[in-house]
Length: 333
Image (tube, rainbow, N blue to C red):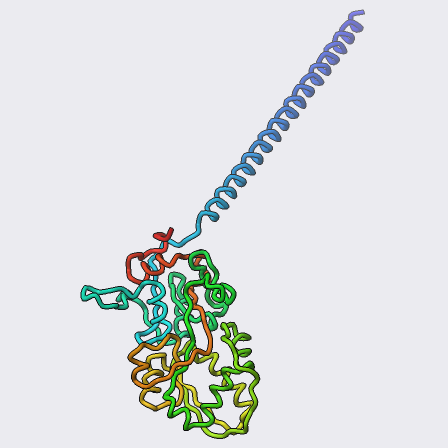
């Protein structure tokens, strides 16, 4: 009997230990499960917080981008040279030409302006400098620079025709009437430019045509023609002369693009047959014996670098930039 009691007691002890072990394992599993759940919850909370922060950062970035409508850098002013017809028209139309202390009109373009002696030169300067501003013929505008709206109006043929775009001027040729009459080819070229054919070329190249005189009929003329003057008028004159020569192959034509002032002087002195000007001639130039003829109208585009976020500028702001009253892009309204 003693032996049986001991055995039963040992068995009881073993069972108790087994139950204790099971109880301990259950507690541990429960504890581990609870810990995993807490970790998952913490990770989810962290992920949600990160997503919220990212969304907030993106929103802040978008808001910042929407308000970054202008640069905060000094403006590089690019201008044409003295004697340029484009400059003469631009400073007059934009109020940059002002009366000095003597009461005389004076071009007040700022002294530190970068000066270029051609339309292409202005475009290259502006295309290569994010802080630059310049002005060129609308007909010469290409995709290397951006044209600004002026006073909320686009620089376009339609808005120039309607009179809504204010920065516009004529393209003229000038000559000594007696010299022209003595050169049959030069006189015939003028007739071609005025014709339906010539004015269609002008319109097709983005300029504003004038009233034409009817169809052109080639007359088999021969000879040589020399033209000198505006770098703004030059490109369309090259197109006109190319078409004219196709109809009159026995005519030779030489075109020099040296600026309106030089072209007017050359026509006055008789060293060229036809002068080209991108402004109206002054009374003293007409009094010197020149005849003026408008061949087209053109806008002057105010241009900036493609990276500049500005899209519109006022006439007053243009005037203040070019006279030195405004020096930084951030000063614009």
